[in-house]
Amino acid sequence: THVVTEACIHCKYTDCVVPCPVDCFHEGPNFLAIDPDECIDCTLCVEECPVHAIYRDVDLPDGQEVFLEINARLITHWPVIVQKKPALPEAEHWAQVEQKRHLLEE
Ligand code: F3S
View (cartoon, rainbow, N blue to C red):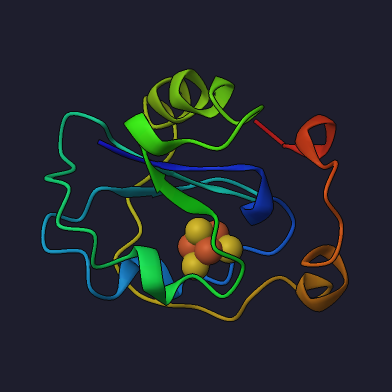
């Protein structure tokens, strides 16, 4: 599966949902999560993300491994998102911030 990581938090650009052939993205208040049982590892979303938040599970950067479990948990109570919408208002600011894990709204 592919995994949405920390960089998405408070940005939520949603470009990633457009090419997804299996509608595996779920939307929370300030983050998207990928359903690991639906993702087919097509990789089409990876290049769409302006902040490079999406990785394959086996290629997660150091410190981002926890997001594998976070994605799997959050999709269970977040709705599917299939259409792009405007990024969060402060997205450009938050795109520059690295330590955002504690700001994830579940
Ligand atoms: Fe998040 Fe990037 Fe998608 S910021 S919503 S993973 S395009």
